[in-house]
Image 1 (cartoon, helix red, strand yellow):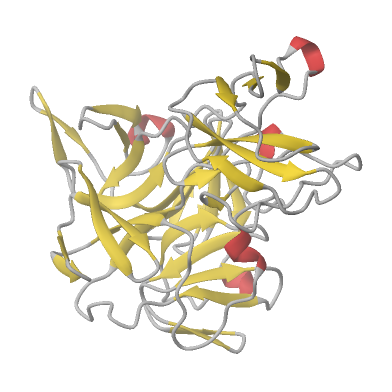
Image 2 (tube, helix red, strand yellow; image 1 turned 180 degrees about the vertical axis):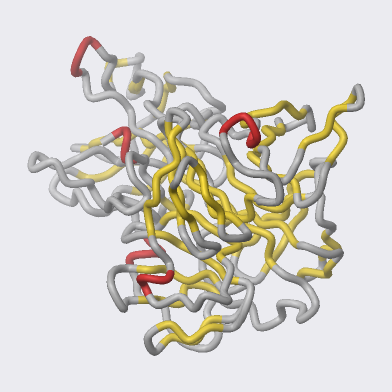
Length: 358
């Protein structure tokens, strides 16, 4: 993601305009809450990452850190700004202006020293998203000045190579001064956000806990609202899964998908690794030549292998290998004009494609 506001290929669910007072989004995402809360059948605490799929919830991980802002790095680690000082050991603390990376077994390490980066005392990071090239997108909880630049609580700020830059001006887009941006990631058309108070943005009504998309001047779309969301809990932040990548196409010495005989009626498929660092598995789709828009899944997982042996289901078949991580699949490759091929109507997972792989 070179810029949160640049258009990119993202979940198919986002391509439909979802509106209404109660809408459920199919794309899985992760979230945190500010107080202990019951979400569906899950009792969540402020130190836990919870997965949401539509209106269903599941506990993903205990981080041991009170979460004030949340993102997921391309390598799968959680990126957290603590909501309050959290002990790091040896008398050292992580502070709300810091960013902490937490791996799958709960090991934490300082990712960004907010004070050293220039974030003043008394300012907390309360919304967060991570890019694929090391950039971080964030928002502050109070008006903040860094090296002469003024940022408001509804602004989106980009941090790259130690430089803070205003990326999106909330007040200029009609967000009231009393509203605080507390959840952040990106959609195919722009930022995906949540605010801490009820708002009317253009003609759209937004409640705390809603996921809403800004898609251009005076253009807002409600993407997700859970009508069972507890009234006494606030969404601390949310994180879309890291996007999936693509199998190499053979350029620059890379290894494309290669099909060779494997004895009898069988074929061996082999390919190079995905361009996205978070991908750890692959799917195999088979289609009939001439019906290129409807490949069917042969394997929804290869166990991480980059070579499999299959028996074709019919004559005149073609094959597509799609990288995946634990939540989403990536690219089916591109057409001759450079546009993305559409996902299978029977896809193994929802699709998100990393811009950096295109």
